[in-house]
Image (cartoon, rainbow, N blue to C red; front, side):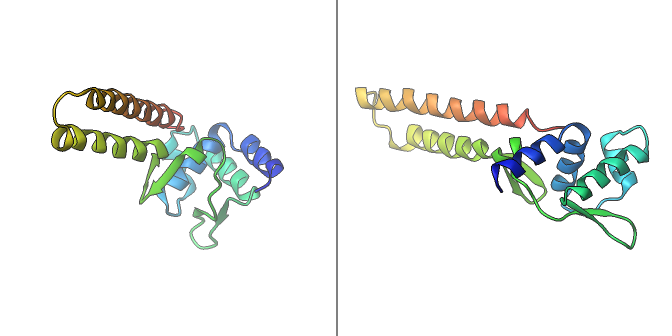
Length: 148
């Protein structure tokens, strides 16, 4: 995706349209207008319909002829979505995996590999704690950027 297209999508995917897109991405299945309205607590189905149609005009969702459900055509990695990975129906911040790996490695080192409190081991203890803390901080920060 070119820079211009990316800017267009970032401008178009704001507010309630962003929430509708996130909901469809998270659910991973076609949804009706009423399902979207209820899930996002919109005041009426017409608000959900408007934002679903907006996403359809952008080429991000398609409307099924039978049943009138909407489903994602493709995923765009713009804005905060660049920092998320989808596993099943759950979206995780990339930093979450880094935090889990660094913390697990740190704990394994502390429990099984460390032999005494030498200067090198103290450096590794200090450095490992800082790295793990940074990854957890970033994972939580990115997680807080999700729309709901």
